[in-house]
Image (cartoon, rainbow, N blue to C red; front, side, top):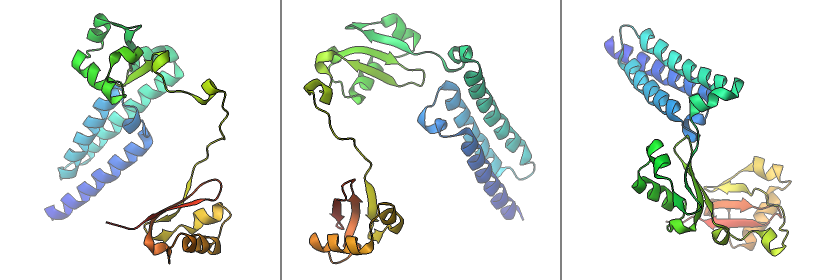
Length: 225
């Protein structure tokens, strides 16, 4: 009987965690601020407790709902009253500008110099002399503005107007033809089979990935170890 209760409470925990995560949205993964981070950890811990709570599972379930509701409430508050965002989310902090490191701002953001160097390398800057401005965002990420001489060359710098890029479409994945994608591109199996033969493939099963661009050019990646 206890085994059945464990299974039921575990399923309830999974369902509740999934429902709360869907309601709270993808911000939990993509843009964690301080409160979201704490809320995510707490809800996960309570969900684990719910999975093993056999007598009164409604208690951890209510706690999960309250934490999720508090997170949603603060998000609504920040959107409804913009002036509260500084208090709820915090503010970005300039930690470097015009070749100067601001020790006081780094201390305020509780950012160690070694951590700052790691973040610079993660952004692709192994020489901090290439950085014009560095901002430590409220979600814990570092935003870097490079010096003008170090930024990548843009097409407008060379008076070039490139064609508009379009998303490529997968038509074969793991040897399976994606018929809906073919149809959306206005193509059919006859066209695909012709393309396969031109590139020395006897069937789609020999293709690990097939991508079609906006000009209906097919790029094929073969199966292989």
